[in-house]
Length: 363
Image 1 (cartoon, one colour):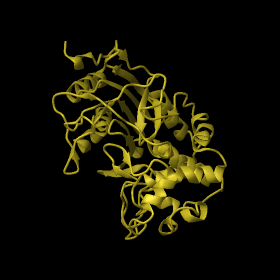
Image 2 (image 1 turned 45 degrees about the horizontal axis):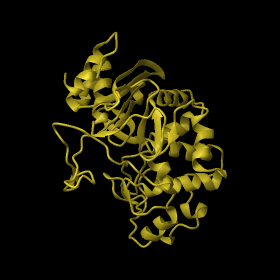
Image 3 (image 1 turned 120 degrees about the vertical axis):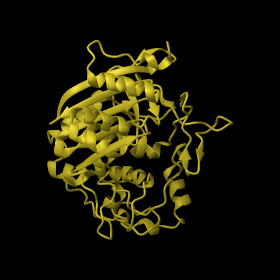
């Protein structure tokens, strides 16, 4: 039996399970967790396949996945909690809170940082291979401080530097460590019991192995990138050899968590228990650039038009995705353990199975 025939269906499979199973085989996804919510209520929650191919361990509802850049939404939410507390404002300049940042950065606002419109140089010199320019914050400022800075609010460019600084802002304003604050103010009240920080070097109980459909260089040291694009393997996958990131970038991408964590988080948001409805709307509304046009992001959330609707989404590591259409009151969460699994397409396809109008729009 082929390796990817093992993405076993639940005992009482339905049409969604059939679709997921077919896509997992097609995309060579070893393991996956899925949840669909309507009006904040779970209408579908299932797990499929293997968390570890080597050990033949199945994915369960408690399996922890590498969430990667999904982390940014929780960091942004932490900043918004401080704003709700009246301890900062989004249009405050970063230099007023962190005077140690390079002089050319000081006029950038928190809003511009959260929406990837800061114009600051990115600490990641290789996004695909998660290679930062520096091993700690001080070195980051030293190496990036003399590089050119774009005009804030002029354009959108995905940026990890700003989220490292958002962690510093949280620490400075709250008087707590970043992870301590997020644990106390977000994870605990949202009942995110499996949420924890750590890269590939960390021991995370119950965490799925990570695999990749991206090709690797001949010396087997890095993912293969040609002309700025990853080389996708068509016939096989590999175990991901390294997913390491220094601790100061925890606010940008070091979170691990289960589907249960994300479902609890979505329901906490829906019920307005942490972020007010107004705050959540602001986070999910595209920011205005200097020329009056909409940017691609709200505050950490990616905001994209879809026919007469708009999609509010976020994802991480090209393996996980949250796809939500507020006008439809529906959200799909997809967690896979395969980099380059196209989770956004999978999540959109699943929503389309519930809503024929969405199906036509995402074709």
